[in-house]
Length: 483
Ligand SMILES: *[C@@H]1O[C@H](CO)[C@@H](O)[C@H](O)[C@H]1NC(C)=O
Ligand SMILES: *[C@@H]1O[C@H](CO)[C@@H](O)[C@H](O)[C@H]1NC(C)=O
Ligand SMILES: *[C@@H]1O[C@H](CO)[C@@H](O)[C@H](O)[C@H]1NC(C)=O
Image 1 (cartoon, rainbow, N blue to C red):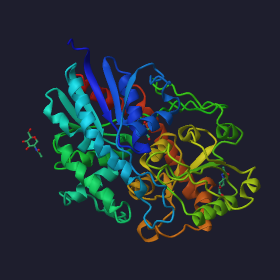
Image 2 (cartoon, rainbow, N blue to C red):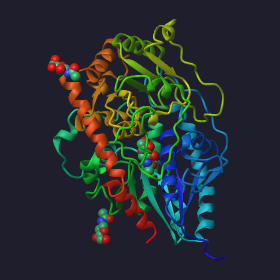
Image 3 (cartoon, helix red, strand yellow):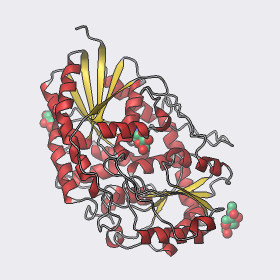
Image 4 (tube, rainbow, N blue to C red):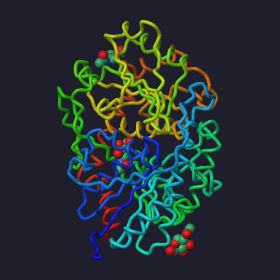
């Protein structure tokens, strides 16, 4: 058979929204380079989920808006239990997703045969797998023209610390990094810790690491990742954020907003919250979202309602329960607000219960701050748009991300003085009101935080423009895989 493609890239995401989404954007970026064919591989349910939630990125046929094709694979796996999240659990990690995480083990066989058949028609096959999918791609080592790269979708700060701690602190680091650093206690379930640990041995055969972060945000921690023995002799690229940044308000155009060309995202013209935002004044409104893996107790929701109302600040609240492992099965909990609340606040805020266009909201000039669980996607999206963060971490890498945001980058305020100590307590409305006022109103602390967030946003947007540092790293990765 004649070699049809020079280089074929096979992308293997981890089946949870934040990860599916990042590697879908990565697929779209890669597919815009000439002569590279891109395959996106997951279970049937999760490939479907990624496509459905991709907003303007894809046309129904799977082509990106710049008309490059991504080949989607939907492999069948045995049915897995998909229970609802438990808002009252004393650990906030979404343990109800564990069966869906484990269902990914079944992808090993189908991925191995896909790689075998692609390796016979391409000069080189390049696997890019989520760091949690190393087990699934392990059979690439038996094929001569296949190489693999480990994609990290969390911050360099958290990965570095995780590796450094698990390797027994192989070299000294500045004491400041470790000051008040939350331990991993309460961040994960033990089942998930085992799942992560079981992936690590398979990533030994990878040729390099790709980080979805920017040296503009995390240069210091990228440098630490470059040190042996952490680096393990592998090449590294920091290719983030590359989210579509061509997002500007309907009503006013801010020339500071650099844009990147290969993403022509279409605004969700009709989403009611964007139309509502168009009517608010610049930086007047707070956006609240806890992502796709948080399930809040009713009592906590009530405290948020009161805190928001007392602050008097306008708001958009994306109010959803955590995803289930299979988002297509069954009903989702409809979160109840106190009686009469929505009516009472209707001139102050809106509640969005469907899928909120987060990036477009954060890119809107009326947004002044983001109350966020500090998942890495949310952090990066907010930072790219120059929006300061009220950090309210829940689990996983989030507590440490909140330290990166508030202590190192100084572009946000932490709702917790000490996450480890207070993580199981309901955060009271007076604290919520206080941090909102601090970050939104005229006061020394808030003014400094807003100024730094705006500056960082400009720097990040420059870095992904033509000639910027992030753009150069992506080009360098492409040059490397097409060598
Ligand atoms: C890295 O590579 C060099 C030379 O290629 C080799 O001498 C060294 O042992 C390697 N180090 C590790 C940690 O694998
Ligand atoms: C990196 O993360 C950002 C922020 O979540 C996301 O929007 C973007 O698509 C990711 N980029 C890549 C190349 O995966
Ligand atoms: C902010 O507060 C300071 C001190 O109270 C005041 O001098 C300044 O005019 C205020 N700035 C704005 C934009 O309101």
